[in-house]
Length: 262
Image 1 (cartoon, rainbow, N blue to C red):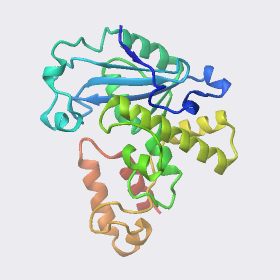
Image 2 (image 1 turned 180 degrees about the vertical axis):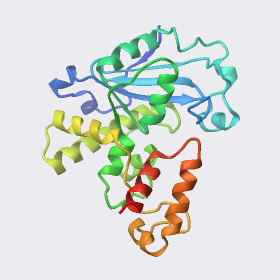
Image 3 (image 1 turned 90 degrees about the vertical axis):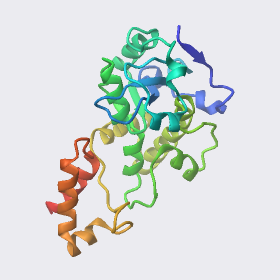
């Protein structure tokens, strides 16, 4: 059996108080730690998820089919020695349980594209999902938040939650808190019910983010619309560069095409 750890020692009481419809719309808050960041060749080595129905967190380490890179070890502190006696994810109880839950439930992840790719590499399909990264960007149309990584949002939003960065269990704790804050914001701004807000978040997550400012390069912090007027060739060069990159960058490709096609 995979490890189950109750969250009551980490989370405040309200984290367990779900609206009644959640029993019909199970949310699976999930984070993976992996052997690296290449979705084409790297694989998961730690999985942690929290089910809104079960109200408990499940976490387990797995021996991946490829070794953990030194770079990944330096970030997650998960080593190949730690995993050498672990079982594989495919064929595990957790794999079977997640397959069942994600078939009918909704995955919630930060940068869900990556976690979906890791799960799909293990044979698990993810038909419905919420990406808190894309929802956070959507709710900040003026790009006032400098960064959108999970831990930055944790402190930017002043969330009182425990969670060590680059640890699957810690990240799931923070993910839950970020999700609840985003849910409250979208409900208030658009006058939606809980269920309507979740459906809206699912719809937002399906589409690439549209940026309004550069967060890098020589035009960092400049409005893209402004740069388009003064240096259109830069946008054309950047788009060509993104398109040639094998990993691509869906959000920036979408954004650059949007402005260049105006």
